[in-house]
Picture 1: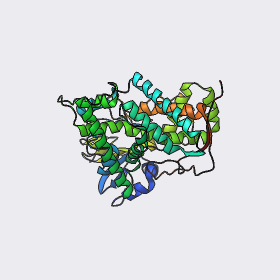
Picture 2: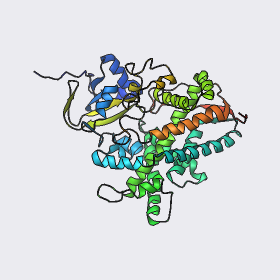
Picture 3: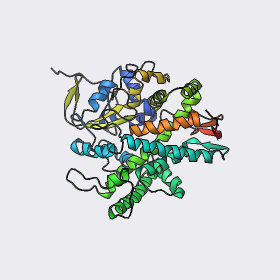
Picture 4: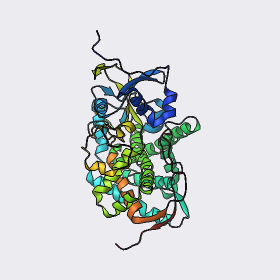
Length: 422
């Protein structure tokens, strides 16, 4: 007699199309219908396990049970992650490469990032005051591209900002796309990787000298477990893993404006509150609105969890969006309420907009602190440093399109710097 339970299973040959049709809600819908935190389905012709919730996140980030190598579909590797990047590493190799990323996340490094971002916002405001209206998403992507390159030590001429911004954005706007949009993302990645590989070669030849605390310098001289320098292609992929996610923060900033618009009392509260409340507001934006729908791993070896059997090599998806909206974790999860973070327990497994687990030892996004700091700088400008109008437009957003963003990309009019003397 078996000592394991039969995992709830979605009937049918394959459900890849259902995942594409339901997007962020695919796993959560089935968790509700099965009344289970875990179920089995079939995706891309193979058995897959989907799960969500705090306990599921804890086991998912157990590196003895799951691995990341070969877990991401090739189309995602070719656009979003790149080949041989830190996301696909395991064990000692992952720990050592992750340490390379965390080395630039020091308090001093984050302070320098804040100062660069403030400078870029100031320059943007001067330009925006001369415009009748602007599309915030497109403008903020350029702010963040310039910020990211400056912070990472990547030289970027003003006339190249639009093109580099477009290429970096194509990488995170295309992984779930098909046809021309997907191929555009692949082409953009190839182009940026080639450009950055040439810069790495220049650094190593002494022809380019970025600051020693920047990603371009540190990554160019990083050595693997065998003491060898990373090949230039891998360095370029990892530098992109700094640049691309910073540009992607534009999605969160658009949702920040949406929250300020839909919840005007929050704007007034932010004007009179300290930085702690600003951080709580930023965290609630990251929890409430869609960003990453799920993350993938492969079962490393057979094991049993909660009396369910996991077989080696099985694709497993962890529901990020659903865990951030889990009523077992969050009271009234579909209500926007920054105050919930005043009593959040700080668990790395129940609040996972950019993945869970430990920043240093595990697979939680190395750039999460960067995201929070850039969002706080941006929030200060949107609330305290500028005035603007939000004209009538389509502010709805899709729970199917990945990534999701308000359909109008947020149009602003009559942008003016706030020159009032406190």
